[in-house]
Length: 146
Image (tube, rainbow, N blue to C red; front, top):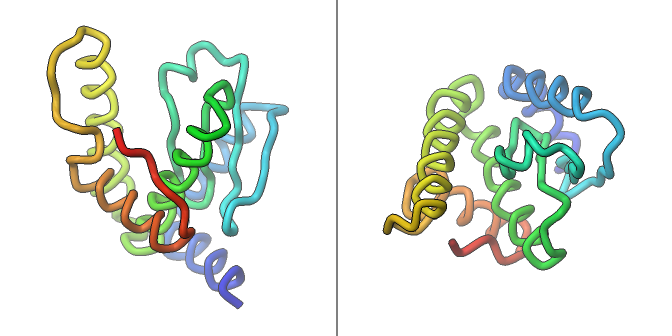
């Protein structure tokens, strides 16, 4: 019943981000995929431009750089699943109130780490902190602690 409700809400209330996620997944072509608590994870490899993107979620579609270690992949999956839960909560507002701030912060964080500039923890911002909390509560796993 939970899975049916998950899909129903994702494909109605969260339609925009799920369509974007489906298109993105199809554009990636043949990659390893798996189901994670009802969400579809794509573990992409061999896409140099995408490795700069890192990991992201669009509705029930989760994209993880498959070149990470298996322990890190599990922690990232918990975090990204938290973003999928945010999609259920915010619906059509997800891209504006979660997706865009998360993308901007991820880019700034990566740039600051690359240049050696000091910065706050990755999870210090609301979309990331909330994703960790939601992911941990719903999966029972341990999210990223950057």
